[in-house]
Length: 216
Image (cartoon, rainbow, N blue to C red; front, side, top):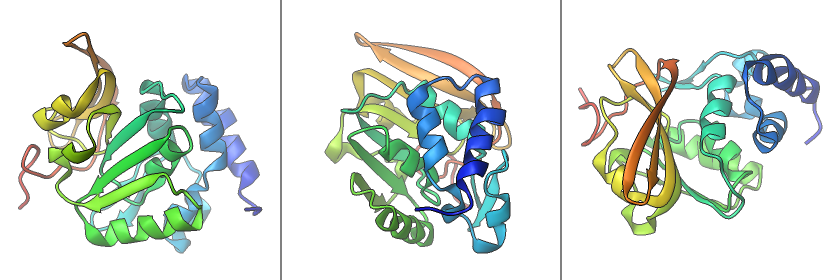
């Protein structure tokens, strides 16, 4: 898909991601090839490769590229991995994951956003994505366990169903904290034991659901 955006994507990788510690070559390649501009409204496409979030409608946002790369890198994905994503949104993070692993299972509670995301998955011929509209805080037990889980919204705690659906060994990344500020947290499950690592402070939209914030 040749267009005028390839150089802009490469500049984002070289000037924003690499200097800030994104070193995984597979993640950098995904960030340099997945067309972020397709996942935002046409009027916002000139801003698509700025390192900041953008609105995607329904009060939701597409995360800044650095955070997408950081969360993806923290999962240390392998080609044969099966990944659960909670919060499809516009589908950009999903597309990044789909280039790096065998299968992505993604859950989005807002049907209109999921419909847009699915159109882009088809356009990009990403056929290793399975999606559904549902309460993501309950995970997707039918397809568990997952080698990795990524949650793209902030919750007061890590939902217990997701902990249970994470494989052993397995890695999960999620923003955890208050409704307006969270700590990006990596949960590792290994030999039945759980450990946590805090990466940095972030600000995500609310994780709404039975095991997150309650919908108004």
